[in-house]
Length: 252
Image (cartoon, helix red, strand yellow):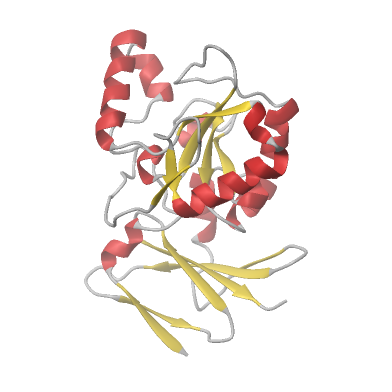
């Protein structure tokens, strides 16, 4: 067995960090950002998310009809968007559609807003339907690690209005599980906490791979030690609050 020691701040890192009005984004490590749109060289995603997004767009031939509207944002950019929305749209609209600076998924580089290519694209609420090329993107999204982050009917859980244009990279197999179980990202984090590492795990398999997923609470005052199985590949992400999500890829 191989022991992996994780410092407390590592709970704020990884593709599974939950960012919302209750959990702010912690910029603890320098991100590797990658451009995602040759037409707009100011659009970036975190590298792993960018690679997955570009493969998905290539798979569906999406660039002719889909525009990348917003990717990674600095906290200053988020502040400007929030302030402008308050002035132009008012408090009620802004609270529904714009995250408070420091609490936006866009700051992580793991979120992207998409819209149909047209002459006038609404930066805050771009048009992204459930038909045509948009449906093709949504149908393939989970396979490439993306979820529709703010689904219709779950506004009471996400505390954000329905946003069919906003996608979040969480990686595989988590996007597939969230989609199949019809969960929000908030619900998925609660769901995983019942699978305590070393006691029981959630098993998930597709046609190619088998995963074992569990949660481990972080030690509050010292390093968290995880005993890794040398016979499998272990991926670790913080949850952005109190622990780690362990995704173990096993031989099928």
